[in-house]
Image (cartoon, rainbow, N blue to C red; front, side):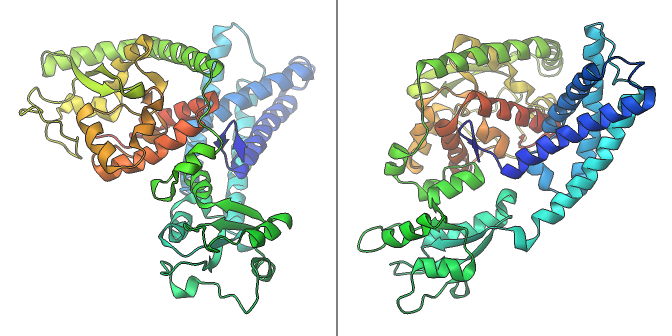
Amino acid sequence: MRLFSHYVPRNTLFIAVLEALILAASVYLAAILWTGPGSIGSADRLAVESFILAGSMLLAMGLMGVYGQSSIEGWKTTLIRLVIAAGVGFAVVGLLSRGLNETLAVLGIPGAVGVAGALALISVERLVVFRWEGAKALRPQVMVLGTGSRASRVDDIVRAQPSARRMDIVGFVASNEEEHYVPERRLIQRGEGERLWDLVRRYGINEIIVGVRDRRNGGLPTEELLECRLHGVRVTYLTDFFERETGQIRVESLNTSWLIFSEGFRRNSMRNIVKRTFDIVASGGLLVVTAPIMAVTTLAILLTMGRPVFYKQQRVGERGQVFTIRKFRSMCNDAEKDGKAVWAMTDDDRITPVGRVIRLLRIDELPQIFNVFRGDMSFVGPRPERPEFVSDLAEQIPYYDARHSIKPGITGWAQVRYAYGASVEDARQKLQYDLYYVKNHTLFLDIMILLDTVQVVLFGKGAR
């Protein structure tokens, strides 16, 4: 479902609400049974405290990636993250209560017992969910209209994307394509005079994905699709399917007309004010939290590499304007001897030992906070690239300049969803995430990206 313009799996929302109730109820019941309602205050206050603890732990679980793609990596991995998140959430509530000089009844032994019980229940619930999601009878039955190169990508997406594994691609129905890009065994043959609605009833189809490129000369059977739609079958254009299931706008399936007429790409004064306020607040908070880290980093660079501590680079920002960023120096001074821009590679020998650590933890990006204060960048947005790369990429990748319609960011949707880009193909993949962000960016999505950024930093994903 779309929540504030961002696609969120319904089961994720359901699980998050269910687990919040499990946490709150477990803590509340443990406190009641342990000390009795008369000795610890009113039941209303205890209920409020239980929900505070549940909310804090739910946030910690989100930071640990329990509700992201990592939650589908396996039950054991999820259980480990749940235990860590529970400890973090409990500790945070304890520190907050001390800071406010407020003694919470749910802390201490009652809360610990309640949290332990909640973890046991959530672990069982997660195990059931993993088994339930794999049940064939519960998966939507999907049919693809079209057998061209773009339509054939649907099978790849379903196999590769965890969120899409809960559907079955029944098969592909040929339209007017001269060449099929799907195996013969995947084709659904239509009998004489058989309509799409007949196929829908025969196979129990819930959704039709339209992957026909040429809609002229009968390529798109509009009347048959309308018949299916009027009977409650979901009809989805291929580009919308990719957007929904991958969090990308796939360049190979993209038409300019779709960009023009699709929902999204909203820009107005209120959104600009909200985003700028968010930038200042988030950057200010990050500056306060990371000031000691930046001081230690400065000292480490001076002691191991000498001056300069920072290095400057030209980057392309909003509307193609070039601006200067500063980053902590992570490479040797002669990293680009001939002055030619070079992609950073895995195990790049130009990176110093200190540089490798600060790149892994994304500390080298922190000085860009001051670019946010100046208004050159946003806290969340597409990563700004060097002018030398932009000119080449714009020639090789369609719609590349669309990412310059908004301010670049320190972190972004592409950064948390894809590894470090070091080639034209990487740039193409990241652009597809950037287009999704440009189209759907809201304060809600910015907050989701910040939560994912914490996880990326904690687990060192995508660093080079």
